Length: 386
Length: 108
Image (cartoon, rainbow over all chains, first blue to last red; front, side, top):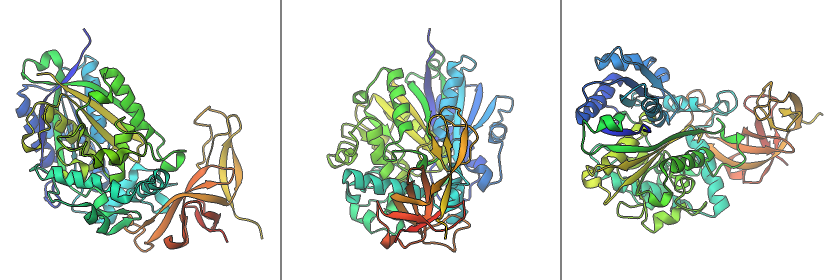
């Protein structure tokens, strides 16, 4: 019989800036929540997603470090890094561990601590996801790279900043109902357009913030999962694609080919199409990326992603509920951890345990985790089994 | 006075080109040779960095652009002009002999 993986437990810390909490403290809170939620009595391996612990905390070797902190030293333990997609790629590595048959129950956790540093320090840390010699040497930032995409997108498709600003507005609206979200404040399109310019044309409210957080999930082979839960959530597909490391190396910058490729492989593996997907958690580190993701994942034609927003289709009651817990913009974006938050949130939705954030009648959900400037993309499609 | 030039790398087999120094072509594994490209190009897209990374604090604000080099590869570079003067499609000329980062200014 073909092996299949399922989510059997999830844990998430609130996302805050200036918590004073350290990496281990954050990680253990999320991991213990996930283990308690699942009821498993053992794990066969530990996968830890993180991007910047080496640069910011001068701490590496998080695999053994977190295994020790959990009292699980002895298990195979890995740190997985793929910039802002570290969390999504860690989930993919864990799924592969299960599907290989070598492991039956695994814990995937991801953590990032970004507060306590100056904005130039964090900005320099994030630039480690791009080419140091040719790109970071210009002084460009990740906001700047996304700003260059936004300018070309608006110019090419004649889309206004007002239209794109609907994305952060939606995320802030959804985060009002999420007690773990970092930014629980309603905003409107004019607030986005009046916020300070960060990298022309992108403004402060087009951008995700700086925060600390950790998320974890317990995954098990489906036949094992049934021992622990009546409502496991099936991992119908787990894919990763890569693209050139640098934005300038691509002929087209208004599409992330890695997103399209990973999504197409995921739809094929799950035997599904975008029409079957009820909810999305997408990587809106910047407003423009949210709009592009709607297109690259197959929900809108190129240049028309903002129409879905204008028609209310991305709201929780809409055809394709998007970032129902607030997304990277408003739930928060502790970079290496975001990909695990997304998969955990999709699982919570499909178990019908999302409380005020609940999307009605959701059966299939997709999470998109983007590393660097679209250089790595991880896609997970989950399906409720109850 | 000699015209400023960009050092580029081009694959003799398939024509792949970049301004990164590489020995073998990542597309076809063919031999890559160094070539001199005209220090002229066209702005594809650009931005102005107002919140710079550590090490660039004293330079902000500054303009960064993606540029298509004439008959050459796409590059990322600094633009020495103010953002108010820069447009998509503006023609630019190499403004410095430094290889990293490349710096261009609007052509006159």
